[in-house]
Length: 194
Ligand SMILES: Cc1cc2nc3c(=O)[nH]c(=O)nc-3n(C[C@H](O)[C@H](O)[C@H](O)COP(=O)(O)O)c2cc1C
Image (tube, rainbow, N blue to C red; front, side, top):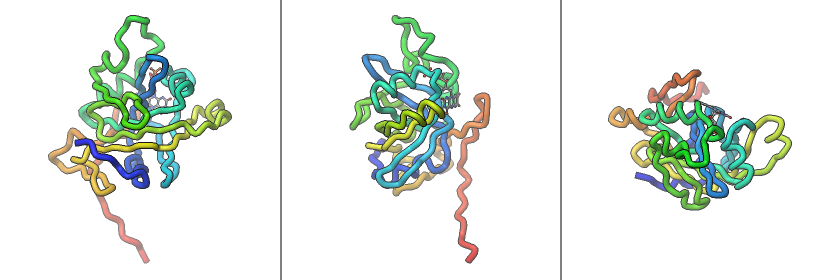
């Protein structure tokens, strides 16, 4: 079901404000965390912004590797999304299973960066950090250039999301607070007033 998304259309994967899973790896460690504060920043080449708090384990992997991936979870991954956003790999012992394993998340290698991408998601953006040390330090804000994008062709095709009723479990998640999410699928086509 995975289909390549043309890079100039990658911003559309994030335009509707989904919660994402940030995955990263470095030096034999991999990790994944939830992030509601992610957004597109430019069309072509596509760029994104995401807040990665300095207290997270993921942040060190991103800074060390210069890469991160944004994975878009769907309704069927709501509990796993909330859980990876509620526990930290900083609390793992050296022989403990990592958060992917603990939360039952499958993974596969990103075709361009080799980053661990989260199975069962509906879109994946591989990004290289655009270094802005002051912005990262002061605001925990990371900018990235999207170097590869894929999406589940059942719900994203022709450069657009199509959340048909038969694919309810594949709708993206939009965080409210405390593990409560909206999942949206009430399309509306606006017309210009004049
Ligand atoms: C729904 C949800 C959204 C979150 N959004 C963000 C976010 O945008 N940025 C952030 O730094 N942390 C966010 N968090 C918190 C991190 O996911 C959390 O600190 C996580 O435990 C970090 O994992 P790590 O230390 O293993 O990297 C969010 C948590 C949840 C549950």
